[in-house]
Length: 370
Image (cartoon, rainbow, N blue to C red; front, side, top):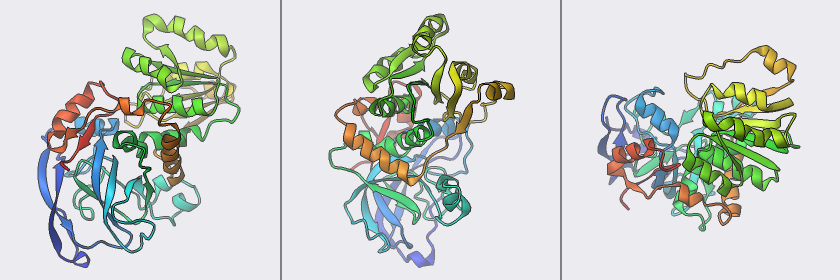
């Protein structure tokens, strides 16, 4: 399906976008050429994507575990350059290197204003999750171009940050800034369940904030090797080793840790997370954004320990600002670039997806021909 252009947009230019179309979990991706819009609606920005990365949520969609309306262009983590923009975007200019929020929000409904949750806007639009008949159709990042909407928060990217470091910031890193914003200020010991990209980002953020003990649990050796490089203490979660590894946690926090952040997406870890928390502790649930997430948890377990449980889904504009600033400040401290693969050409996206499934890299990069 080709994108629909309204009469208000005028004619389309002869320039073209290269896009990868997702038709469903049981169908192969297909490459198409689409015309670029010649004019833009109020507040819109046409962006040439320099680099995108494959997020775990896209793997869930591709496998059928997370349904989306189709046909669509997937992908929401990216960095790019402004090609053309509506005059309402006076803060930007053609050629600006940018990243953008995963969600477009109206800015005036109750979730946006009263609840401070623009990611739950009444008129929410999410990049990489919208069908091709919504707007221009250039709605995802597995493409050479994308059209950003009026309510999308845009952040300029410093020159010293390479594309591979920046691309995941508008999903994983911004989400983690939202997650840690809910922690108590006096955290001395924290357990992070999962050493994927979210977990490694959490280690780095908490390390920079001076948290004394940052324990990061995983079952994959390669991931555990990365934990120490990002300021955490690696805890081997494999069943035959965890009893010994757990002693590292209880030795420094005999009454329990101040907080646990779940980023593994595995519901059975919650019981252990509850056991590890001190009375009055905080539990952040971040990774279980899928149906297989029923918790084996009683109200008594929460009440008797006076726990605070909170859910984190996406983020607000200030968290994306914090994410880019954090990368700028710490790019020489942590090996962010080593987490991302060499770019796979856009036309070979299917091979990139297979590589992402191996978990050899925290992120697999995708690049349209420049």
